[in-house]
Image (cartoon, rainbow, N blue to C red; front, side, top):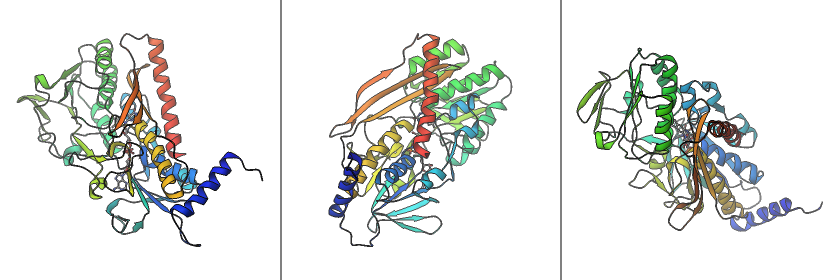
Length: 420
Ligand SMILES: Cc1cc2nc3c(=O)[nH]c(=O)nc-3n(C[C@H](O)[C@H](O)[C@H](O)COP(=O)(O)OP(=O)(O)OC[C@H]3O[C@@H](n4cnc5c(N)ncnc54)[C@H](O)[C@@H]3O)c2cc1C
């Protein structure tokens, strides 16, 4: 057998595994447990198993048997995607050598290096990857708590909430009002609320053209603001009213019982109210004790390793890493860097300098797609943007259509990369 580069690296990896993690014959392989089978966790589990070629024992713990992507869930609301198109199972990840456990992780014992599950099981690890997404900051919108999401949905974790929001929009009376309470920074998917407004407006323009959309926003500025405002003016003239902090967008109360929104004390009766509250790291990150006062988990910009525990990596939305937006693209990019670093750590395989990337596409109307993105590199302090790009106002229809088509390709690509 001739020694090619891959075999050579594989031999190196196996050799250094024995050096860096001494094991006696018959001892189990190093165990990596991943909590959260979304953009970060599914990618990490898949790459850890695939690239270690059986040298690691990889377990993925995911609460839901089916993952529904938040990405493109706004297109479902607009009628461009079916709900089933957003759903993905874990069969291929399991077939790729990952042990998939369908259960909720309820605790992490960092001293014992174990994860406890709602079902009662205890799962030991040598390295733990946390990619649990987001949870909501109770009290961030006066009058609203997570229990009110059945009346005023957030639809910011995709699934039944997304279906509920769509059903409510479809049931709006002619000329009714859709309200959104937009979130404070930082939050998952910076353009997400505004793409959602575009998709709601698209639906209403076809089915309820005298309806109104009201956005109360605590932020002065938001992602791709000029592009969205141009698009709303062009496609949905007179339908969308954005109320920023100057006009009371940061002085909000909602009353789920009477379907009222109070902006700076002024009461508006609404038919649908989409409350997107303030956010923090997925709860298991806090339970593991790896979050800071900010509610997010600080990580080493070079490899996504927790700054609080060298045996833990935190990916995606839950992490506090610097300039990267909380997006599926970012989580997927970070997961590959983390998987490489963990293999280096446990198996001694070669670790290359980290390069991260992100692009966030948004659909404003049929064939009117825009995007923003950047390349990132670690500095000692943070993951820093080194090169960025953004769609321009006034672009022609052909370019916007091409941008939308690019986003379709991205969705197919990232879901294949996550789920196999
Ligand atoms: C409306 C909307 C539109 C978006 N559009 C885009 C887009 O176009 N492009 C883009 O890149 N991003 C987009 N995003 C953002 C993207 O969805 C998130 O940034 C991304 O999913 C983050 O990945 P993650 O791995 O951190 O979390 P997630 O993908 O949310 O995965 C977390 C997983 O962990 C599981 N979990 C959590 N806690 C536990 C536990 N204790 N035990 C077991 N399992 C647990 C959850 O069930 C979930 O499956 C959008 C988001 C929204 C809301």
